[in-house]
Amino acid sequence: MEDKGCFNPDNLYHVFGQIIKLHFTRSHNLLEKQGIYPGQPPLLFTLYYKDGQSQKELADKLRIKPATVTVMITRMEKSELLTRKQDEQDQRISRVFITEKGREMCKKLKSIFEILNEECFSNFTEEEKVLLRRFFLQMRDNLTKASLDKLGD
Image (cartoon, rainbow, N blue to C red):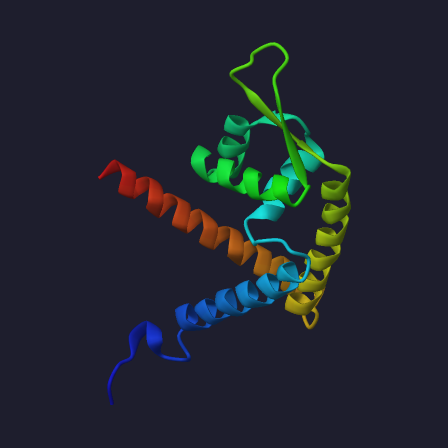
């Protein structure tokens, strides 16, 4: 009998990969109905909670390249979710502001994420959710440590 390793359907890594793919597909479909791309909600919520940030601040907070932020903002401006204005004190800085339409979208996004949360965790007890959260945090820490160790090589 051949060993399928991580491609074995019983392997945790295989199941985890399936979950990631299913979650991505489901969330993408729900967001698409609103005309939103998967990377846009974090940017919208960052401005929803602290409006008027510079593009550099947004890139740092979202841990993405400034060029990526620029493309996202341009697309979201066309959708009238955001607007850019020059900083009054420093004309080199462009500040990004959420529009009223963007604020309304955040409300819709909160509902979408509540739906996803319910769909993902509806059959779990509170104790199971606490355990699962602990396991996810441990996985995150393991991967963070591995990434940092790799930087040291």
